[in-house]
Amino acid sequence: MSAAEIDGFADRIRKHQGGMISAWVGIPDAMLVNHLAQEAFDAVVLDMQHGMWDMPAAANAVAQVRLAGKPAIARIPVGDFASASRLLDAGASGIIAPMINSAEDARALVRTTKYPPLGERSWGPSLALNHTGLSADAYLKTANELTVAIAMIETRAALDAIDGILGVVGIDGIFIGPSDLSIALSNGDQVAPNAAEIDSAMKHAVSCCRAHGKFACAFAGDGERAGELLKFGFDFVIAGAETAQLRSGARRAINAARRVASGN
Ligand code: 3PY
Ligand code: MG
Image 1 (cartoon, rainbow, N blue to C red):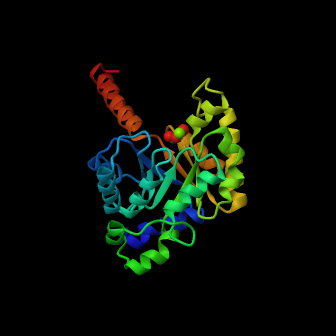
Image 2: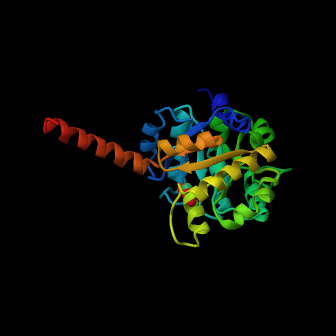
């Protein structure tokens, strides 16, 4: 994919062009990202909230994803809006911000991810200019459109405020965190990301997004669940974290070797 096609990601997701499936990587290694990005994922998310990425490693990983012709998206740590603009400066195509619980939180995300007049993102996208091939002027004029700001909905407060969050100009879409949402809705009783109550909340979130003309993303623990979420109408889903994919791939290989060796 050319730089223009990679940067067309924001337009494609805003127009709901096909359910997208993304990789999700928390192990802070750009070479691991290089391998995963060769698979038929539509994007790669770098998880800086629960993954162990620091900024230089994340910037290198963004470059590896783009080298593979894909858009890179970064999930920042809670409230770390300063990192959001640095990751966009490094060439990320989008920012996922966890625990956005109010329209005010959503406005804080927009402030650092969008240039005026939408926000007050500070200037300094040297790597993004290299990656996109745009002049400074062209980047300034298009960056708000070429990148997406995504608010995570994963608490009771966020569900209650979802219309207000979606109504903030500059918020392009939402991302449901089903594990935290299940903990919140059960008052700390369980982590049950696939529970029926979460399904209802997710379907409700998709319909709110449609009403606001915005897109909906969500985390799924594996491919089967990701398929279900696409059927709910999500525009962009995760099909499991790389750690789970790595371990299940290893388990499958070991089991196959044992099965063949034992003649079963
Ligand atoms: C959640 O399920 O809470 C997430 O943040 C997805 O990783
Ligand atoms: Mg979460």
